[in-house]
Length: 308
Image (cartoon, rainbow, N blue to C red; front, side):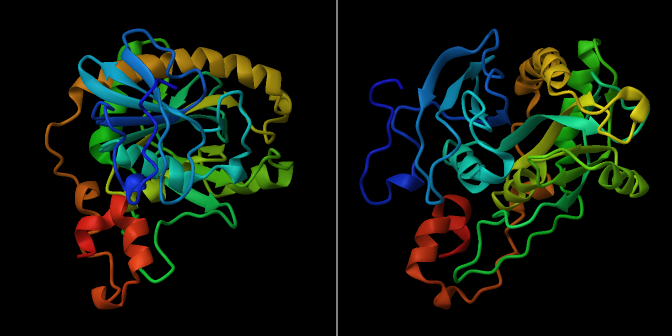
């Protein structure tokens, strides 16, 4: 880590952006190699403490075209963290503390439809949550909030992603789809895979739904870049999921994701007019006088302006 970048261990330090860290507009959560992209100026590692614990790893912060971007390896460098072990709250909160208004999730998915082929890119607009026991909200322990999630992705950011993906011209892009988020770490049984197809879902993964829910609570615009790596196990003719082939395709797709990130950074709107930016305005229903001091401190980076 760059000297002087650690967060000071004083009261309230977890609620502040690390001293000297450039302001960030776009946060990107994805694979360990995603941040190794051309054009990232002044890249530095930044360790961020949050009220929800430590994120998956140190973040890589730099500038693309003059815009602050922060990259976070979802599973930690070297892929050490299971999907169920990811501290999703700390990951999203860390990006929020750095100032990120936009959050892009990049990850591999299995295809549930013949026309969604390995190597394709899907930009989902809906999610089905089949996880269990994961922390999917910043609230609780004395504070109740109910954010709207009927449309879980930001239409503005998603459209920028679609246009950027089409502009790369080196893969087929699907502009919408339903993402089933399963618990893992095992892949689906064949019966589960067939069930998900009966639900008319499009892709299956293990991480994005928590990121979408938490981004909405953090009033961040969220979009997903789902990189199709296999056909799940429903497609018997394609063979069962082969992890070596998944990794090969994912490496190629990561380069496409880097080009997408590089394209959208200078197209982010200067002012946000979408519902994401004010998702908490009417969501917190707890009597402010009854909110414990500990809850106020924990939620300050996420909802501080609504708790006074």
